[in-house]
Amino acid sequence: MTASKRSSPRSLGSNLAKVAVHVIQPEEYEELPELTDDMLARGVVNKGGRPRSENPKKLISIRLPEDVILKWRATGPGWQTRMAEKLARVAPK
Image (cartoon, rainbow, N blue to C red; front, side, top):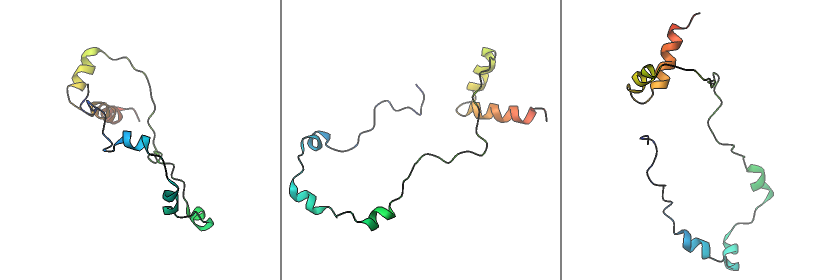
């Protein structure tokens, strides 16, 4: 298991059992503001995610000797990025 993976799922900190059995009462609807055309017009759709890269990486498959991979992995997290940077420096122009 890698260090970035959690051993247990995150807790929401909510009592989900209580939320699941709650029945909405009519007076709770009165607490909500009524949606107006102005409110809807101000709404913005957020697609989320990170911005597209100007230089996206491409997935390739390459076979390397096992000892080469082990040496790079032994350098710690980020070894693939460091390998790519080294290859970029020595790549033919």
